[in-house]
Image 1 (cartoon, one colour):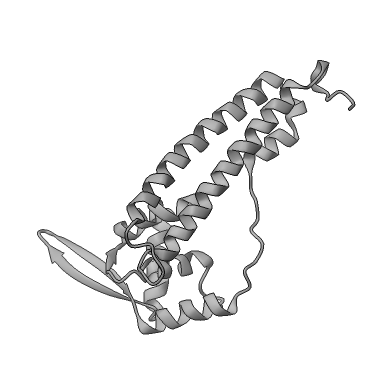
Image 2 (image 1 turned 60 degrees about the horizontal axis):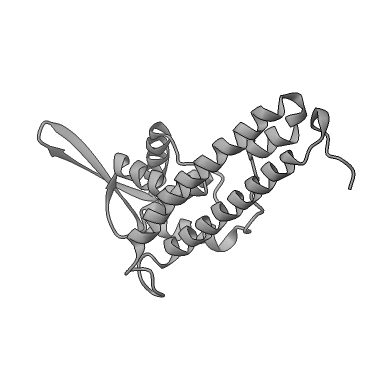
Amino acid sequence: MSQDIPVTGYAILGLLTFGDELTGYEIKQRADMTLRFYWVSPAMSQVYTELRRLTDLGLVAADARTEGSREVTSYAITAAGQAALRGWMDGTPAGFPVLKHTVLLRLLIAHATEPAHTRQMLHDYLGELDRAIDDLAQVRESLRGADRPGEAFRFPSLVADWGLDYFAAETQHAKRALAGLDETGPEGTVPPA
């Protein structure tokens, strides 16, 4: 993996591998529809910063054209970009994901607040999970018909299925934590078993 390209750069290269040229705005939209479920969807400014870097390295080709009164630039992955992406994919260990889970952090130190606040936080999280499941289920459904082996959206479909399973497990864990809070004694301590 090149030291000049952060993982977000490789993610953008990956978003450009589906056979179409995209503007920076369209890359951001594609990132919002995909990356946000399992990675960080980059900010618009970060998309353009990475596109400049990738263009300067010859990994992405920029095509500027005039549409009406404005200039529009679209981007496509180059052969060098394909090679760099493949090198990153083939030569980088899977790596264990770093879990930055604010709900778990807040649950860990829940003794610092009232139990009702912790319960509300968990209920709010369950609502967020429901919305994420609905959103991702719509994305997954949109991939049907092109998700069989050898088809364009086979791998994004596998990621969507994984994400749906992950959110289902998160829902189960949050409900278990809520049930555990209901078993607490006075002052929020868990009675001995």
